Structures are given as structure tokens and as C-alpha cells.
Length: 433
Ligand code: DOR
Image 1: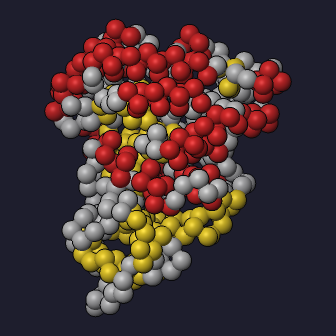
Image 2: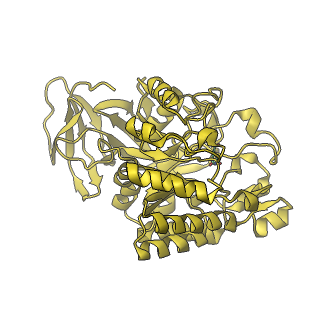
Image 3: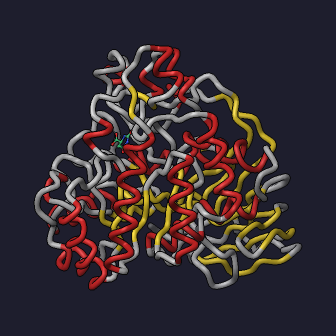
């Protein structure tokens, strides 16, 4: 990522974990040079208008499916990184459920090579088990040595408790973090949506909340046994939030994320039988959505992560039982979460941005991202207009896929500019390369 010339971001309110204040920001040589109330413009500097906007650290996504290698018809690192930049991100963690899976040093190196020149930084997560088959552990020491920090079989949970225990013991010794997709396969089997009133009414086989909660409670017991930190991906039920609250009260070293779609959509969407709403974990009940929102306000949830999961149009147009689970997220995440949490009065803008920036950056070990916005820090910045209304048009997505559940809906808030290592990769809502 190259650092360009000087840039002045003028007229906005700077918001980061330290609070909100009126300031201009001068960026040069890839880093924040000055943050001051009213800055002059150095000769030759590019001026970016931030009038009416929040100037925040650029976002960090803990959970992005970039589909390379193996499913380039759905997404590439290049197209996914463009979607990320447009969504205000400076870094994403690429999930390892690719073909082949990211489960050994050579695939990690290949993906990193493909990510050279991407619009945002791409950190690579590796699988916990070889081929994500749940049978043999990956070479943790070798991968940790290469700098891999997060390990996950995402797309599936690790079903074998003994194997996960051993993985936690290795992870503890190496200082890396396991991230679990909590889904007990025997309980979830055959479920196409959340099991509840809507699945009964529609006659669609459901996946019970318990499929998530059983694995979460097993994993919490293993964290207690081993003392090794663990991260929980896309928690989606009120029961999971209760388990997380107990674990926190006990002092277990755990972190957790929720997705924008689980904060904003319910299982009622499946009454359309449209597979664009099929996702794992499934969209849940209104009570679950309310519990997730409250958990963001209470500080139980550490991060909002997209689970950006592109799928080709033909695949998503198949009947519900045949279509793959997953939805796009990178371009809409901030506006959707803004609507669910800030517009609704539940949390402040500063709190929302910490869920998208400093906290996920800490979990992923990405110290050059996530703020704060202060002289000497790497210039990863997101300029967000909280007043602009945007119509989501799936065909205009930067992603190679169009499976957004928000197509045709109006969202509040739009990313105006994104800077990655000082380079304006998005200006006035347009990707620059
Ligand atoms: O709905 C989902 N889709 N959930 C996952 O955990 C994986 C993802 C995918 O890769 O498509």
C-alpha cells in the first residue's frame, strides 16, 4: 500500500475511542501529522471535504469471505477489498473456507501474495483443522511463526471437543486465538432457517437456537479448563448473550462479535422464501435481535463483524434448500449498524466506532489499524456522513456478487472518503482504483 502526498480532511467532527471533537486532520507520508481545530492547507495538498461528517478511524472487519482461492466467480481479493474500502474499512481478516482451505503455510503465502495491491490490508485467518474437516489439527506453530493470529473453521464449528481442547492448548502456548463458529452439526442438521414461530408457520425446517448455545457453553467450559482466550463469531441468540454475560462475570478470557444483519433483520424475512435471507447462523426472532442490540450497549459484545459471504446469483436463486447460506455485508455494515444502534438511541457514535475499529483491531492483532486519530498514528481514516440516505442497489455493488439482503431498501449514512495508510482509496463515495 503506497503512501501518497499530503491530504487535509476539513470540516468534520473527529470521533474515536477518546470521544468526539471538531477538528481538521492533516495526513502525510502515510501517517496522521496534525489534528487541529482549523488547519491551513499546505501547498499541493489534496483537500477532502468532511462538512457534516464524522471523521473516524477506518473500520476493521474480523470476518470477511474473499473466496480466493477457488470461488473467484463469487469474489476476488481485489473485488472484495474494493467493497471493503467503499464500506469504510482499512483492513479485513480473510476467512479460510476457501478451496483449498487456508490450512498450511503455502496457502497462507499464496493468499498474501494475491492480496498485494489490494485496496485494504488483508490479514489471513487459518483453519483449525486440516481441510476444515474437523479431524486433524493444522500445523499451528508453523502458521503462528508466519504471523497468523486467528484460527477458525468458520462455516462449521469444531464438533470434536477433545480436538478443540488440544487446539486450545497449542493456541495458549503460541499466543494465537481460536475463533469458533458455534453450531452443533447434529442439532442444526437440515435446518434452513431459525426454528421458531416463523419456521412452523412457513413449514420450513428450522435450526434451533440451542445448536449455537450448546457449542458455546461447551467451548466456554474448555476455555475455563485451558485458560486460553477464545473469540466467538457471529453470536445470534439471546441465550448466547446470557452465556457470554456469565462468562464475563466469571472473568473468562473471551471476546465476541455480532453481525449487522443479526442486529437488524428477523426470521420473518424468510416468509418471502428468498434465499438472499438464508444465512448461518440464521436470522433469529425479534427477542434475539433486541438482546444482541442490548449486548452492544452493555459492552458485552466486542466487535461488529460483517460475515461478508458472496455467492453467485445462480446459487442464490436456487430453492431455499439448495441455496448456500450467506449474505454480503462490507458496503452496508456501518449504515445498517448506525440505524440499528445509534439512530435508535441505544449507543453513541463513539461507541459504535469502537465496535468497528479499535476493538476488532485488538482482537486481530492489527496495531496499525483502529485508531486513535492522533499525530504519529498510521492514517487509516473513514469519513462518514450520518445524514445521507442511500438506496441499496445490489447490481451496483463492488462485489462480484449481489446477494445483499438490503437490496431496494434505504439506509441512513454513507461513507464519503476512506484513507488506507494515508492513500485516499475512496473519495466522494468512489473507489480510486
Ligand atoms: O452464512 C454463512 N455463510 N455463514 C458462514 O459461517 C459461512 C458463510 C459462507 O462462507 O458462505
